[in-house]
Length: 382
Image (cartoon, rainbow, N blue to C red; front, top):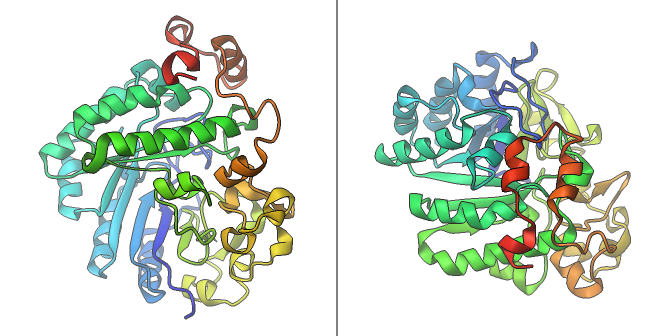
């Protein structure tokens, strides 16, 4: 084997008890009929071990809604691989917390998308999400499980970052991942943060790192970069291109294999474990060709001209993939060199009327929006 993967994100179910406006997988309230069986999942776990996987991240949907998730988690642990779990926490109760403690996951991520209850619940499409998430953090810590928080930003909740930071500081959350929502699944292109907001978000991550020090690890993950000084400051200084199919893998609950679950276009599907075992798919020299056989000619725009093109490879493939070429407009180095793509992308804040117009196209905003929403400049000082 030439490629040895580190982490697989595995959507073990599409079933979800929320309906987030930015859901990339467009999850539903009922499980799809073609979900993998427990037996099929256990065979996949064996193959994950065979290809050298080190960490298995159970995701969804919400993984806690799958009744056999403890069976799968313990099977993963029994083969010497680490388990991580990502959840909205709605299904987390005292009984499940005991199970989680016994599983002893490498990480337990809870999604929180705002610092105010009404905003988070609106984004998640479910009343009570916010308070339950905060209560879950407290209960998990009381039971010896150290939860982390994952926040997904778009134009609506962008100004909530400082408010949420204050809450996480009080709760003594030790790790916080801030990522932006891309236009896949239910997320619409016009609701994505602008390039200038992306820059501000990276600066916020650096500011928070300095503020929190050893008390909280804050990261922008692989979508925040790529090749400038700010990138180095926020932990992506050793970026050598997208990890999909190299060090990372994505599995769907129906057995679909991708290099990364964020790569929703059909051209990124490498096969299905019901047709060919994962071991064969991973070791097929034709698999994941967009990364393993990277060709600089697949880049376009500034990415192709960039002096880091052969190293960076266009950054995050999910963001860069447009038609048959890759060009990543969300790049800190590009901003340094040539600025933003246009005047709209250079905007760092929007009025409540502009935001309301955008989000009323998704679903009707609650009255709290009009009562509580503040323009960005009042919160982030733009």
